[in-house]
Image (cartoon, rainbow, N blue to C red; front, top):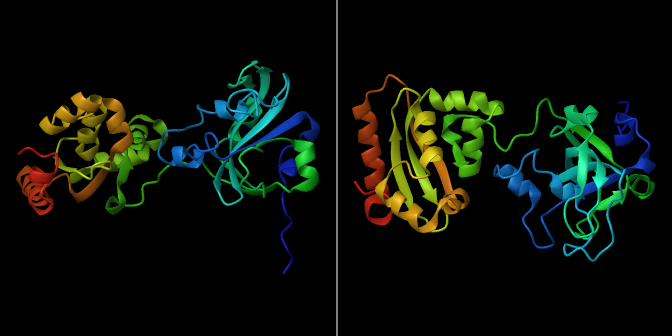
Length: 287
């Protein structure tokens, strides 16, 4: 069988490597959170790419400058072993004297590849080296095109109702972003019993959804109010504010029902889960 030829980045993009910087982002600082984890939790998107244009090699700004005005930048984020997702392409317009993001202008001719192009390259794990002159990098490394996704890589895809388990930031994306319209439609097409989990304390809250737009309608209330109007959650909110809910709460669909299911049936199942998990005594349910 004939071996398939490797497609390199410069085969895909007709560019002059000496004019470009390659940025291979891994985490936010030497001890910070991985960008892929922020992406998967919904706290990072294609509009949040300033870290790809960080001005200096040191977080405090006393290291070497990463960029000069006029540099063209291919910014990637590591999503797996030696695999990186393209998240920004731009031209540097301003470089500050202190550590911080450079000013840049997007190069829109590459927009179709953002969030879709995945490359393979063996950079290694060293945090300190993440910005490279592309021509020098290609002299010692290969940058292979692994795949081009049909659509932007998303933090989560709807598979079935048995696997609906969402963080607060991801739920916000699903209920507000047009790219998740299909997922939102699925949540709106069923009634259900659900569980909110406080991952910091382990406490649970059991609720039910039986309105005209089903689970989507009820969960929308949490985005609008953070608490859904529930007494113990309101008390928690008054102590901890929005950031606590955003960082710690997840939404899990326990049971789902056809839209024709009677409200009494759903309330019966809600009460079953409250008793089974003892959420009145050891969780956030108050009735």
